[in-house]
Amino acid sequence: MACICGSVVFIMSHQERTFQTQAPYNKPITILQIMENEEIKETPVPAPAPTADACDRLNAARKYACEQYEKLRRAAAEQMEQVRGYADQARTQINEGWGKARVQMNEGWDKARTQVNEGWDKTCEAAKEYHKAGEAYVKENPTGSILGALGVGVLIGLLLGSRR
Image 1 (cartoon, rainbow, N blue to C red):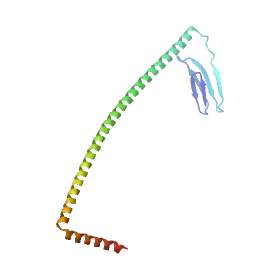
Image 2 (tube, helix red, strand yellow):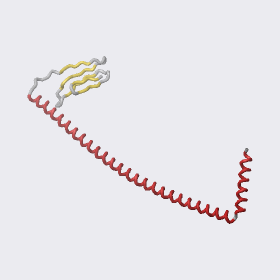
Image 3 (cartoon, one colour):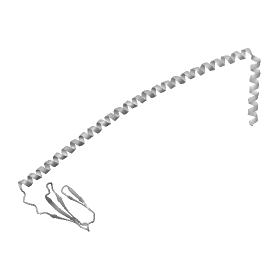
Image 4 (cartoon, rainbow, N blue to C red):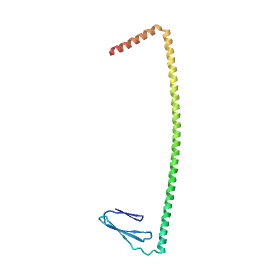
């Protein structure tokens, strides 16, 4: 159960209770009675005749509320500026870290590419040397080369033929 009285909100259970709201400076405004069957009865307190003192206190309370609101709004704005500053710092640090990581990654890729290219070049040179050495052996020993090739061919034929 909820009741709104001016800018004051009352929320109650089903139990019977009586409330008296207090204005600033402890002047009673209204008595709310919330009954078991959830009916709301509002009994206004007889208002004293308005005096200059009451109006002054009301204006002072309004002025105080406005000052507190402005103070809270300024504090919230300052906090938001701090949060924005922290976010900007974090963004800057992330961008710097990402830039450093990108540079390191590119350096690593360049180093790996260089090593792979060097290894490929060495492998190609070794293959060329082995090819030249094989050609020189075949030229020096043609009969042994032909018999060796024949032996390898027979061996491969036997291996493939035995599987069928």
